[in-house]
Length: 117
Image (cartoon, one colour):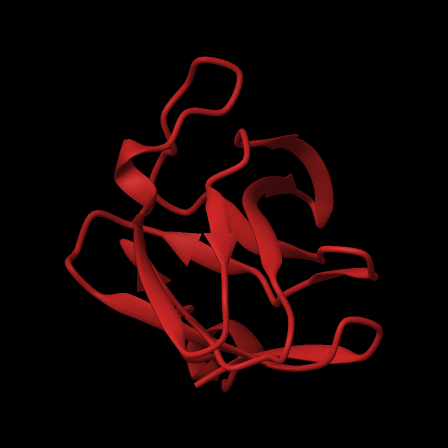
């Protein structure tokens, strides 16, 4: 008998987030930890980003309420445009495997997108 669990692809896991900023604004960003799709913690401000800049974030070095991530924990980028809106990217699962999830931010202070590539 064919079950849905048997045919489901395994969820990809990532150690790094590569954040590429091509938006026409200055951005501040954090990483949020999720449980059942709800934010339970976030990092301190990780930096400011300007047009055509990038940064690699090693998820294994981050702390959430003093704890490091466990394999399978979910996180997402939270971007705030200086003088504008805030948006959250899609969530990804963590594992210390050397693989990077690539996110690209495009747009303006009041209208931007965060896409995973």
